[in-house]
Image (tube, rainbow, N blue to C red; front, side):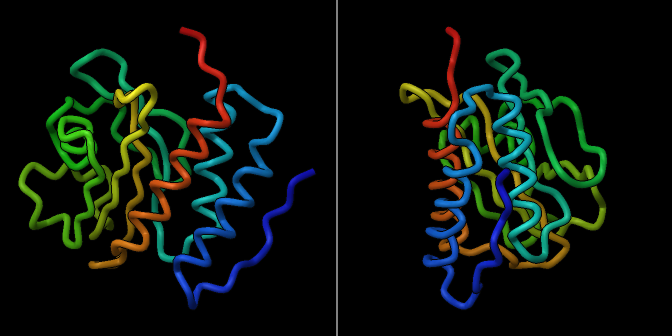
Length: 165
């Protein structure tokens, strides 16, 4: 049985390398996209300090994201591509780091306590098919090290998951 190990948070790149190794061990041998998304969001929520939400949205159609597995308060179920931080990340095809969600035009407030957000697209065969979304009650919680670390975790999730096309 997998058990998460505490990781020192003083060196963020080292923290994310260790978290990535733990995620690989957690997902090893399991290919189901939903099970892997559930465990990925649970591990991120458990291990990253100062989060109030961690989870997935998947493209339900070319213009709409649908809520996937997550940890935190109940969330918005559907988000239009191009709308909010999640929809913007899909439309741009790149990560979006927001230091203050109140300053982000069109921010969708699923939890009024959220103050900062990091959204990383999930890419398969060069195409976005969903996002990992992290929210924090602290303004400026996320930085470029967090973005790089979560992008690596997203790549691990995609590589560890079996896709039936």
